[in-house]
Length: 151
Image (cartoon, rainbow, N blue to C red):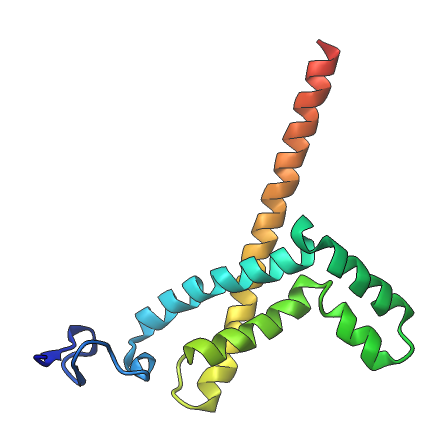
């Protein structure tokens, strides 16, 4: 196989078919910001789905019972984690950081710390916007049903 220069890294890295695993270390700030907003999407989707959607209703109800009736504080807090989208998004973010090795601003442990909190923030903004849209859609649907009943 012929080697090629990777244009996205200004020719700093040569590779045969795939970029190296540490390619995120060479990202410019603009690319890091784009990754921030893109990586927050699956984090928000996973956190929202587990904590709100019908698919996970039974496990969530079990967790609610255990978080209210747990014998120890640790047990109550552990089960509460699966009922709160804000709390759960932190753990989803940690998993995403391990998978992607995404760092923001710094290329050491500080980059992971900053990117973790930034991803949680952006993911929670996405979830808040989604919740507002759902509330508005429910309101419009209810108004439509009331208008249909009146007519």
